[in-house]
Image (tube, rainbow, N blue to C red):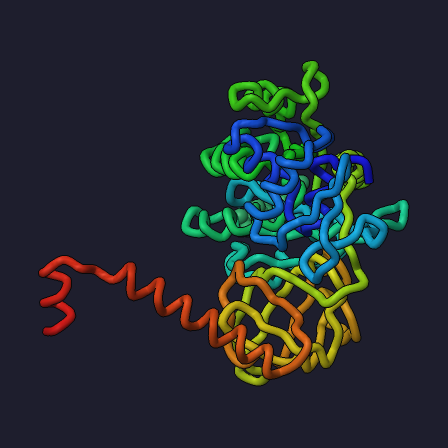
Length: 370
Ligand code: GTP
Ligand code: MG
């Protein structure tokens, strides 16, 4: 290729465009996702993100063939990853239930979401959207931040009868910090006292200017209860996703991010993985954070066993040697020797980090000795 846009380079590194935009900003060359990069900047970015050094020929940004970076011709469109955020009880889980025709809310203890659920929804036009549901409770701020890291788009759910609340504003801040576009779903419009216009006005105070007011933030009035406005919301997501040109190489060793992980009594360590690129298959050998393993089974969001999972798919993975941490990267490797090698290295790194961070004050040392 003659030159490369920020978004294209991001796709080829399987990094988020917004992360590249942020890095460019820090490097003192603010750019938009559609801007063309010169060779030097592109090269700098690639190394900045820890990928193999690129070979640059005259007038050309050619990225070296290796496992780390994907050729442009291998990239295929992938589903957007959408995180649903908002104040507690504004209807995040209900909205997701309505979108996927399920009922998760009914099964939750006290109606409060305790973890991040990950689901895929088929839109009327046949494309897929991956949704992450985040808890609305204040204690889970960290989880929300984590959700914002893998997400392409944030749906901010605001109850029309309650308006913008502290956690709505917090969600706006997280999305902005992560450079992720926001679509506002004004929910509960069926309720008495619902005032969607007031919500749109209040959004202005947080520099979210909706389209009706001359801005570029999409907002959709919905009722998760009456199931209205849902197709419009999916359309809004499709519009946003199209602008972002989200792509990944499905034909390579898989790489994914741990969304949540736990020790299941019957099944052992289980992790929900969001596949970022490549295709994860049963039998694959992998390293996941400081753990290694071999994929014993893959379970989709419907609870069905599947053989493989491609980019943007959330999937439960069985066959881990231990419980990884949310946010860890899963990387498929060639063989078990390599998996152990990488896992040991990562464990050592983790130990070293802990040692360095240990308290070095006298009091701390005495306490440790006591
Ligand atoms: P947390 O996970 O606790 O943050 O809550 P949430 O945002 O997931 O809200 P949830 O979906 O659990 O809904 C909270 C309450 O609002 C429930 O009683 C829902 O039935 C109700 N609710 C959700 N959407 C609507 C709606 O569109 N209209 C009306 N009238 N009620 C709704
Ligand atoms: Mg919920």
